[in-house]
Image 1 (spheres, rainbow, N blue to C red):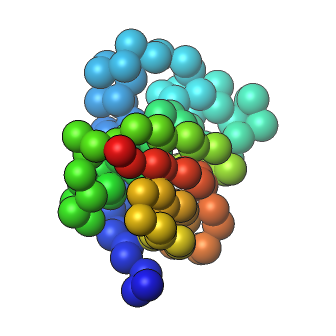
Image 2 (cartoon, helix red, strand yellow):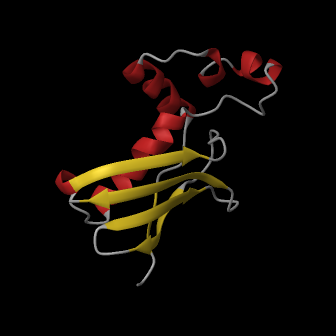
Image 3 (tube, rainbow, N blue to C red):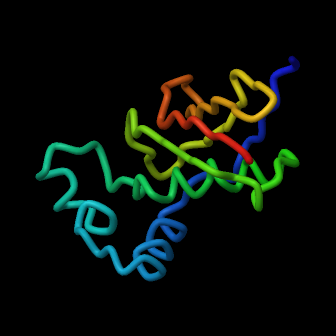
Length: 118
């Protein structure tokens, strides 16, 4: 199998704020720089669910039949920060299942997902 991958636009502060609005999750670690740093983070961080949404978007953009998606199990591995460039890659694929990884521009794994299809 050839590896399939897609690189997304740079994670921006505006995108993170838009996700706060869309999700209703206004935890200060996602929008208040001072609060995030006081909490021991290097900066505000993107919502884990934003990274998970990008994984689902990758499936669709890489041509997988989202309507036949039966199971989507993901694990958050690290934080996505403003300025990160995330790439989703299919790392293994079978007839009805696949494994996906999202990494940042430094190669740090942000999220893994196991997917099965009908």
